[in-house]
Length: 98
Image (cartoon, helix red, strand yellow):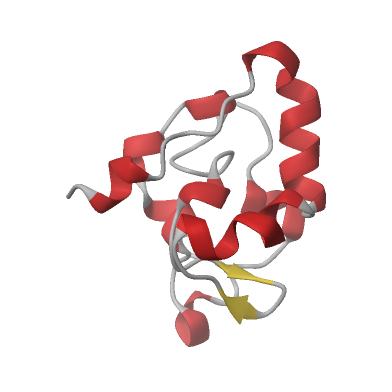
């Protein structure tokens, strides 16, 4: 598996992470529908399509609301660069359908 966003950012919001008692588990760390996308665990390498992630200390909303923020994120750029031609923006609508 590739490095996930919570490992890269060292946010401590992965299951049993240092911040889960106070801030809870990040939705990207628990969103199983994206497990394996870009080689990550759950949405760990597709966090930009998951609503409610905590980026830069601020809760993020829907894909549309956080799109610009994520496009400037160092982790987003890292995954995009690593994936090159196979990089895709996983559909944000997959999460809104359920």
